[in-house]
Amino acid sequence: MLATMISGRTLAQGARCESKMAPEFFKAAALCHLSENDIKELNINEGENVLLKSEFGQVVLAAKADSGLPQGMVFIPMGPWANMLVGKDTGGCGTPQFKGVAVDVAATDSPVRSIRDLFSDLGA
Amino acid sequence: MTESVMIKDAVCSFCGCLCDDINVEVAEGKIQRVRHACRLGSSKIMGHSRMQTPMIRKDGVLQPASFDEAYRRAAEILLAAKKPLLYGWASTSCEAQKKGVLLAEEVGGVIDTTATVCHGPSVIGIEEKGLPGATLGQVKNRADTIVFWGCNPVEAHPRHSLRYSSNSCGRFTEQGRAGRKIVVVDVRETRTAKNADKFVRIDPGCDYEVISALRMLVAGKGDVIVDTVGGALKADLAALAEMLKAARFGAVFFGLGITHSKGRYKNIDNALSLVADLNQHTKFVIMPMRGHYNVGGAGQVLAWSSGYPMSVDYARGAPYFNPGETAACDLLGRADTDAALIVAADPVSNFPRETAAALSKIPVIQIDPYENPTTLLSDVVIPCAIAGVEVEGTAYRMDGLALRLRKMVDSSLPGDEQIIAEIIKNIRELRQKAEGGA
Image (tube, rainbow over all chains, first blue to last red; front, side):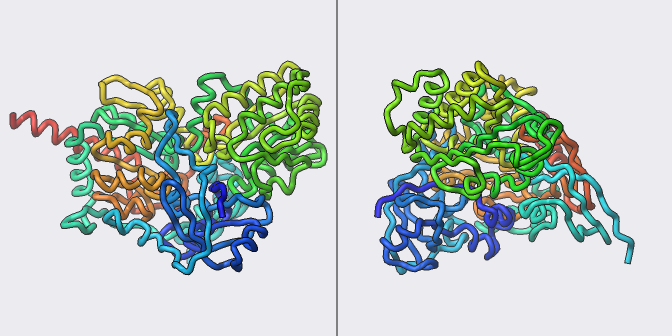
């Protein structure tokens, strides 16, 4: 399923953003919000995993239903999981385009990577 | 047990609202309870698991070190670098930021703030057009029409509506929410949108087009507008334009929905023009919803010391500013920096993956109270006391008002300002030694 990815603050993510290595931050930020119709289209249940791929990278996240999203738009709480999908180009103004990223979304059995695992290939 | 002390009207150091009515109960040197703060603020003030000991990477592993060893190693890294990046600064005091500018000048580095992955485009847009601004007090006391564009204060600035905007009661706004019209423009129906009188949903990346259409409608030139603009119906935009013109005092608050999307600073430029156009009809002001509590202060300190608000390059000996070239993500993106000092920020989490990966290829010094993904890639880690909780200092609210952060409890750890001062001292000593030996 093709979709547009946006990211941003949520209350749960914000309350845990200074304890990023704790399991509570994982629960708050390793999520992909989808419209109920998109969850149906992917033939998954809330809490099951989805694989998102963009031109720049890919990430597995747990699906969460969000009635505020239109069909074809996914929302990821800001943070390291969302940024796996964002490109480095700043368009000449210093700021990468964190929102409005074209992604392909599919159901997956792969697990969501922990925050440490996410950076293990960088020598962390 | 010692008696508890109630610290009254302290300033919350989480977001750009800088709520200054926080009551904190302290007993036995620990914060016991926080009153009036939102979930974000109380979580910050109550505290999380902390780093206690400095660390230096040896044989690929971070190992405990003394503060003096960490200061010395940090100084060596910065001295050896040709173009170090000094990044972060939004979640610390102006006093620490001021020392950071001195350090950048001393080592010929680039100093940049988290604004460049946040409201940096707003800063550029404001430089192009100027800001028809106001204080939050003016908005509270006068605004009868408030627009939230690409922002969701219910989750990002939870007490904004109660203290300054939608639900606040002021001198000419005694009725509070009942006397105001609230508009939300966004790509999704946020919790803020659910509480609005009017919600206009637009397509992602179409802010510029929608703002342009609104400008035409405000100017009475709606006949040139097509039926649907950026996902919004013309009729809906026409009704919105009339609503804005009918305001006695209007305020636009905008967020990262507009700065992080296609168009970036040009979206802000156009939004500022819309507000200038509205001022032909009535009184209208506009303000960015600043995220980190003192990202505004970092811009102020850099501006009064270097002349530029962010991304300041001292490598030439004099300050130079060119976002797109001197911003942290640009430098890392083209491998144009050979060491990084990260203060009060977590770029490894908050930068795009490829940009964050560039930090794994250069020496990194981290100054922060908490372990985070940036710690995992750091070579020197210096734990610090928390500004606004354990250290006092100055911070700027999102409207540019300077407020004094209080110290609520003691910490055995040094503050950011002290740590930067120690690194500068070590740099000077190492330089003197090198000159003496030459």
